Length: 151
View 1 (cartoon, rainbow, N blue to C red):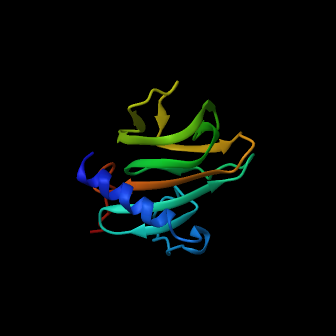
View 2: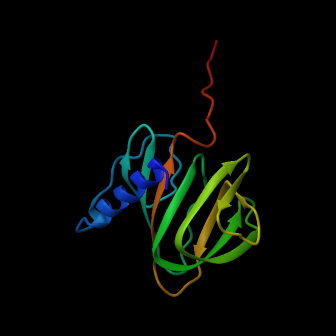
Protein backbone atom coordinates (compact mmCIF):
# COMPACT_ATOMS: atom_id res chain seq x y z
CA UNK A 1 0.00 0.00 0.00
CA UNK A 2 1.57 3.33 -1.00
CA UNK A 3 1.68 6.28 1.39
CA UNK A 4 -1.16 8.17 -0.32
CA UNK A 5 -3.48 5.15 -0.14
CA UNK A 6 -2.57 4.55 3.50
CA UNK A 7 -3.36 8.19 4.32
CA UNK A 8 -6.71 7.91 2.52
CA UNK A 9 -7.56 4.76 4.42
CA UNK A 10 -6.65 6.28 7.79
CA UNK A 11 -8.62 9.45 7.06
CA UNK A 12 -11.67 7.35 6.12
CA UNK A 13 -11.43 5.45 9.41
CA UNK A 14 -11.36 8.73 11.34
CA UNK A 15 -14.33 10.11 9.39
CA UNK A 16 -16.31 6.90 9.86
CA UNK A 17 -15.77 7.07 13.62
CA UNK A 18 -17.56 10.41 13.83
CA UNK A 19 -21.08 10.27 15.33
CA UNK A 20 -22.92 11.72 12.35
CA UNK A 21 -21.48 12.36 8.91
CA UNK A 22 -24.73 13.99 7.84
CA UNK A 23 -23.96 16.99 10.05
CA UNK A 24 -20.54 17.55 8.42
CA UNK A 25 -20.32 19.47 5.19
CA UNK A 26 -17.70 21.90 3.97
CA UNK A 27 -18.52 24.64 1.47
CA UNK A 28 -17.99 23.34 -2.06
CA UNK A 29 -15.69 25.61 -4.10
CA UNK A 30 -17.07 27.02 -7.36
CA UNK A 31 -16.24 24.80 -10.31
CA UNK A 32 -15.94 21.64 -8.21
CA UNK A 33 -17.74 18.65 -9.72
CA UNK A 34 -20.31 17.20 -7.31
CA UNK A 35 -19.13 13.61 -7.10
CA UNK A 36 -20.60 13.14 -3.63
CA UNK A 37 -23.45 14.23 -1.37
CA UNK A 38 -21.32 16.34 0.97
CA UNK A 39 -17.71 17.44 1.04
CA UNK A 40 -16.05 16.26 4.26
CA UNK A 41 -12.42 17.28 3.82
CA UNK A 42 -10.19 19.04 1.31
CA UNK A 43 -6.57 20.09 1.08
CA UNK A 44 -4.12 20.65 -1.79
CA UNK A 45 -3.87 16.94 -2.66
CA UNK A 46 -7.03 15.25 -1.37
CA UNK A 47 -10.80 15.74 -1.45
CA UNK A 48 -13.06 13.41 0.62
CA UNK A 49 -16.79 13.03 -0.04
CA UNK A 50 -19.64 11.35 1.80
CA UNK A 51 -22.06 9.93 -0.75
CA UNK A 52 -25.51 8.42 -0.24
CA UNK A 53 -28.06 7.42 -2.86
CA UNK A 54 -31.54 6.17 -1.89
CA UNK A 55 -33.15 3.33 -3.89
CA UNK A 56 -34.49 4.52 -7.25
CA UNK A 57 -32.62 7.83 -7.07
CA UNK A 58 -30.07 9.14 -9.58
CA UNK A 59 -26.90 11.14 -9.16
CA UNK A 60 -26.56 14.33 -11.13
CA UNK A 61 -24.59 14.14 -14.35
CA UNK A 62 -21.01 14.75 -13.25
CA UNK A 63 -17.45 14.60 -14.58
CA UNK A 64 -14.54 13.07 -12.70
CA UNK A 65 -11.43 15.24 -13.02
CA UNK A 66 -9.15 13.16 -10.76
CA UNK A 67 -8.31 9.56 -10.01
CA UNK A 68 -10.51 8.39 -7.16
CA UNK A 69 -11.16 5.52 -4.79
CA UNK A 70 -14.34 4.67 -2.95
CA UNK A 71 -15.30 2.36 -0.13
CA UNK A 72 -18.88 1.08 -0.35
CA UNK A 73 -20.04 1.06 3.27
CA UNK A 74 -23.61 0.05 2.37
CA UNK A 75 -23.33 -1.73 -1.01
CA UNK A 76 -26.04 -1.72 -3.65
CA UNK A 77 -26.67 -2.40 -7.33
CA UNK A 78 -25.92 0.69 -9.45
CA UNK A 79 -26.79 1.37 -13.06
CA UNK A 80 -24.39 3.63 -15.04
CA UNK A 81 -25.52 6.02 -17.81
CA UNK A 82 -23.56 7.99 -20.40
CA UNK A 83 -23.85 11.75 -20.82
CA UNK A 84 -26.37 11.22 -23.68
CA UNK A 85 -28.60 9.13 -21.39
CA UNK A 86 -27.67 5.74 -22.85
CA UNK A 87 -27.56 2.96 -20.26
CA UNK A 88 -24.14 1.32 -20.17
CA UNK A 89 -24.36 -1.41 -17.52
CA UNK A 90 -25.20 -2.18 -13.92
CA UNK A 91 -22.89 -3.59 -11.28
CA UNK A 92 -22.74 -4.39 -7.59
CA UNK A 93 -20.91 -1.47 -5.96
CA UNK A 94 -19.20 -3.07 -2.98
CA UNK A 95 -15.82 -3.20 -1.33
CA UNK A 96 -13.10 -0.82 -2.46
CA UNK A 97 -12.92 0.37 -6.08
CA UNK A 98 -10.32 2.64 -7.64
CA UNK A 99 -10.55 4.45 -10.97
CA UNK A 100 -7.84 6.29 -12.89
CA UNK A 101 -8.61 9.06 -15.38
CA UNK A 102 -7.35 8.28 -18.90
CA UNK A 103 -8.56 10.76 -21.49
CA UNK A 104 -12.37 10.71 -21.56
CA UNK A 105 -12.63 7.47 -19.56
CA UNK A 106 -12.21 6.06 -16.07
CA UNK A 107 -10.12 2.90 -15.94
CA UNK A 108 -10.93 0.56 -13.04
CA UNK A 109 -7.88 -0.73 -11.16
CA UNK A 110 -7.92 -4.40 -10.18
CA UNK A 111 -11.46 -5.14 -11.39
CA UNK A 112 -13.14 -5.63 -14.77
CA UNK A 113 -16.36 -3.89 -15.75
CA UNK A 114 -18.47 -4.81 -18.79
CA UNK A 115 -18.02 -1.40 -20.48
CA UNK A 116 -15.66 1.53 -20.36
CA UNK A 117 -16.83 4.15 -17.89
CA UNK A 118 -16.91 7.68 -19.34
CA UNK A 119 -15.59 10.44 -17.09
CA UNK A 120 -18.96 12.18 -17.50
CA UNK A 121 -21.81 9.96 -16.34
CA UNK A 122 -24.57 9.46 -13.81
CA UNK A 123 -25.60 6.48 -11.71
CA UNK A 124 -28.95 5.16 -10.48
CA UNK A 125 -29.39 3.02 -7.38
CA UNK A 126 -31.46 0.09 -8.67
CA UNK A 127 -31.03 -1.84 -5.41
CA UNK A 128 -33.56 -2.07 -2.59
CA UNK A 129 -31.42 -0.38 0.07
CA UNK A 130 -29.74 3.00 0.37
CA UNK A 131 -26.25 3.07 -1.11
CA UNK A 132 -23.51 4.71 0.98
CA UNK A 133 -19.87 5.25 0.11
CA UNK A 134 -16.88 7.31 1.14
CA UNK A 135 -15.03 8.63 -1.91
CA UNK A 136 -11.66 10.32 -2.02
CA UNK A 137 -10.13 12.10 -5.00
CA UNK A 138 -6.38 12.32 -5.53
CA UNK A 139 -6.09 15.94 -6.69
CA UNK A 140 -2.50 15.37 -7.83
CA UNK A 141 -3.78 13.18 -10.70
CA UNK A 142 -6.22 13.32 -13.57
CA UNK A 143 -7.21 16.10 -15.91
CA UNK A 144 -5.81 19.51 -15.17
CA UNK A 145 -8.33 22.11 -16.25
CA UNK A 146 -6.69 24.96 -18.12
CA UNK A 147 -7.57 28.42 -16.96
CA UNK A 148 -8.40 30.77 -19.81
CA UNK A 149 -6.41 33.98 -19.80
CA UNK A 150 -7.98 36.94 -21.55
CA UNK A 151 -5.44 39.14 -23.35
